[in-house]
Image 1 (cartoon, rainbow, N blue to C red):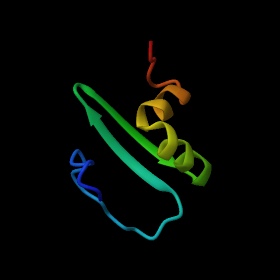
Image 2: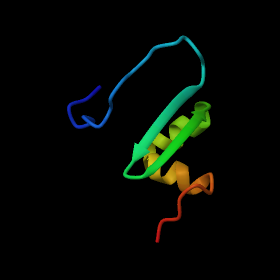
Image 3: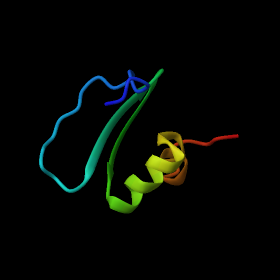
Length: 60
């Protein structure tokens, strides 16, 4: 984990191909399981863009 990502509380290597994210932001909680394509989108756009894409978050 990079120093700029201090918002991470835990990183667990479970050997699975998919990436599981358990995100808490203020009063909102999101649980996402991402495949390779979705991980690339996350890396380029950030987790808020993934939530918007999934219809879980509206960005104005």
